[in-house]
Image (cartoon, rainbow, N blue to C red; front, side, top):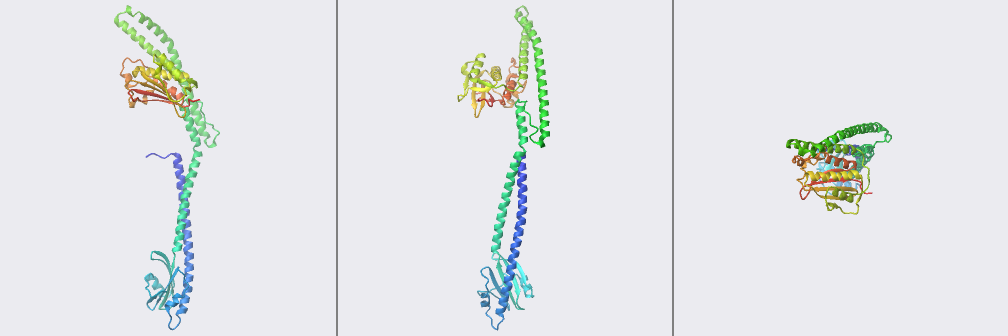
Length: 451
């Protein structure tokens, strides 16, 4: 299960906290409101029931009272319904009725001479029942509907629920806003790390931006300084070693050239050995040149406006390839802001790679992907690059399976690594996919090429 990000977790915490607080306050408010409403309603109902009981007692204090008329004389409105139990019979306003709504326990309490109050449900509606003893054989009951109170409580419950939901949403919005500002320094660190990974080693964090993150900014800047120092030291070492190797290599190359020119004076085995030595020295020289170039790729790209279509055609002609190999994509933009030397080296290495391992280049495409990313593609007619090798093929001294399949290949294993380094110096990347017609398609993306 994928773990939520920091902003999502903080926002969720704010939302849950706000929901719990709002729910607690809503429950407390609802309980307090319910208790107050029911208590007030009960006091009003009890007072009305006692008053009506006194009226009924007065009406029944005659020789031959009309019970129904006495009950009809009560001003109970539509919310209260009187019942009278006298001499074992139940009476109401309309006619004689039974006392089924009256619980037996409450009847026993009232018959014992004590008034009683109880909340019951009659016909599915909440009702308050008040029982008042009038004499040993007569009891007065009054049923007061609590439907209006129930409706009021329902409205209160819905309102408090809506408020709780809105509070939780407000908490989530507040959490999202707070984290947006809280993680901004971390975003700055991430952006700085991306720029450094792209080759901009001048990137630093401002330690004075946030006092609480001074230690982080200082440690980050110190780490970058140490990283740059180590990279510079390694680059200088590689460059120094490569330069030191050039002199003895030139001497060996001169000696090998002499042996090669005089191979007709040697026997076959000696001539073969001399030819092999000359080939390996040439390969060693190319390796040293690539190492020196690799040491130079650590520097940021020096961008300038370059007519890449013209440069690509000139590069193809230098490799003996036709100008028609270069295909410009849609759009009039042929001038890109790139490092001319690096761009030319990228194209040369891709053409050489296609010549050595891909049966030769069949197309060179130049296009611009919105908004301003330049795309260079070189197609070859070889066996292609297996999916398992498409990531590692741009590492240093890594040669694909097509290279291993050719024993006479003189590649150094640094050509594609240089392509990736030059692309990274522009803030871009290099990759390889399968060509629809067969073969490989090497793709270099360079952002920010439009002026």
